[in-house]
Image (cartoon, rainbow, N blue to C red; front, side):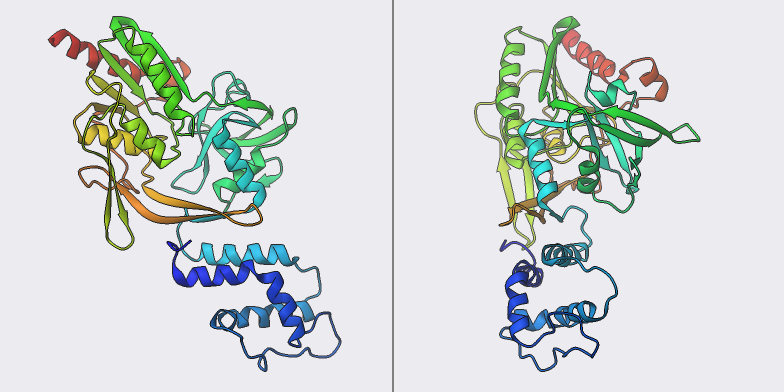
Length: 406
């Protein structure tokens, strides 16, 4: 918590102690229930500390509402959460976020590799709209016809507007067997449409791999979860046992995950040098060097990227590009290069705090910039309709050319 802005810490600490402070306020003479006569003010209350003094105006306003408001007021817990959200929202950083226990549980469930939902990866795009980044093959979202690029306008009767991605995901999630009614806007269609999807238990496939023609290996990583490194190394060892002459590493639509996992995964391909540079708020740089024991540090390599390649995926792709270990083919990446520290609070809520920014080994900014592929290849609506993958095909052609040269 010491890495958070000091002034915000003090407000949040006071907010988290709201129940204790409430009892102290009552003892100090604050009105505890409505009255037909004006209630006492806080002017005569001497703060016991600078923290209480900074929060005195909050209590003045709260007791006015408690005394005068004709209607229901939030309970102490919701008041606490609202106070924390107010501080966090005022920081104007979309990645610093307060997650209530229910939302925090959903996010932690994601990293466990299994959840009840529709089987789609989503993100808030740069226009603040909830976008389908990827649908998992054979899962309800894919079976219902949802596509990458679709915008979710509403879930059931709740419009997704001015929500965090966490709140939106909480609406989409639900018990297996229940129905999610999504209102979808699709590029190229004038009218939105409604899709009803039966939720089911989703097991997240972390790694996919196979051998392609011409002795080319294909390896796809879907997320940088706790199990990602071991599963990737297992599949990579199996592929290398086939003695491939080239490797395609697919990071498309990979939303990222743990920093340490990104370093471990990047080290499988980059034998030496830095994987990423972290610039701290005090101006210092922290370098994360490649770790020894990488399995694929010499084989000709292509990395597939697109607009859904984000965060930890961009760290790995940027390291491979900067060290000339391989080339990037596809579309410009998402551009999420900020570092969040995750703090589990005492009631199982969570506070995620932006504490630094990532840069590639050569010092290129990732945040809001993204990575530009060495070879730009777009996927069109016609490609999707025809189940074509021109990015993968271009990677195969590129590696064939390298193989033919040897």
